[in-house]
Length: 507
Image (cartoon, rainbow, N blue to C red; front, side):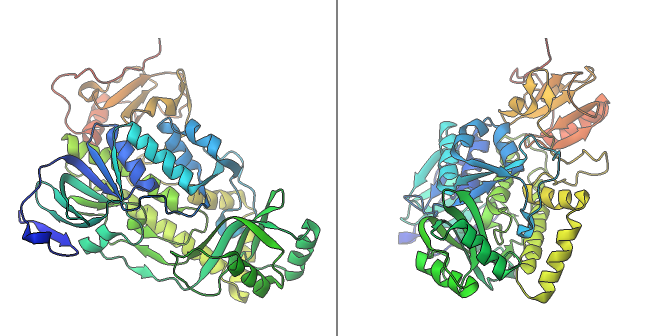
């Protein structure tokens, strides 16, 4: 196979040839997506190097929200207890187009809340987790080019150093160097407007703020002032125009826009953090070209309405990690790695569509405001409210795994089992056969799949096979059918039991 070269400039001094294969996977970018992916790969013994061009955290000290599905993933890997003390829980309602409706009752998650957490903090915690598992992270090292062939990828750094790995994953953000050099299309819409967002103190007394907001009337969500207590508010207001997002807004920008929009700046002062976001919406044509893959913002961007962006990237990493590890370790069935794009790209497309819809609802004008009023009425219906909230928080995702029960392709909530909680059994990132019949076995796949025989498990099915990402790959009670699905997701059975599996059968 001929090599393909993707580089911003020719190799310095005309050097050619391949560096020794020193890593299994190189990841460009150590944000939440890259760090989570590195940790998932390390659970399977994959040699990982993460390249981060920044020497210090560049993200603004803004609060991001971890939704229910991301909190579930953290719980699956034993990370949630480490993260929770750094965040603040908020109700899981009012996400869709800022329509103030409470969360539906009995959402299908043990973590049906939003966790607000400073972005640099979650990035640090995920990087620490990856490093503790053995990932290498090199800060201040920017990828400048790469060349792939049938056996691996040669990566060139900005200073001329050349590294070689089996695979390269671009987790390097919306302006992804990997995506651009790979030549993958990134179609969509450029930013047409921007919004200022931050946490600040307001000097105006609360009763005067309420009176002023009542006087302004319904703004369709374009102006939002949400109190946190102690005079601190979350403020969202339209920006004057489209600017360079790399430049953070100033407090004076907020004052000017609040005056223009509300006739007062509400005494805004003492900012905790300030940021801006646009409504650019783009989706990569492909998530994989040969041995190079894309994840997170490198593959999709959209307005942060509903707070879905970071969550979408972390969930990409969770889907990709075990599949890429299986490819590296040599047991992946032939189409397994391609299911990453097949499963995650439609999820991203759906998120882009729901943010487009929300953007239109918040754009102002008689038409959008009328639709927003109608949707507000419809969300009084539990089924409508539940459907929209489950979209935002990520628990409504169902991968197309073929015909079968409704549970097939969905994630399984953290149910009770005799050992405690289901997610506590998934910390190693392996598959799990949850067997209520006591008759089934993981057999020759026990080096990749754990087995829990528990007739008392809180499960409305005889048995399920869970993938390492917690999605249901099979439902049934027939051993032969199970063996076919074990082969589909976990490759050929081992000729001999390697003794690395766990029989989690209750005593």
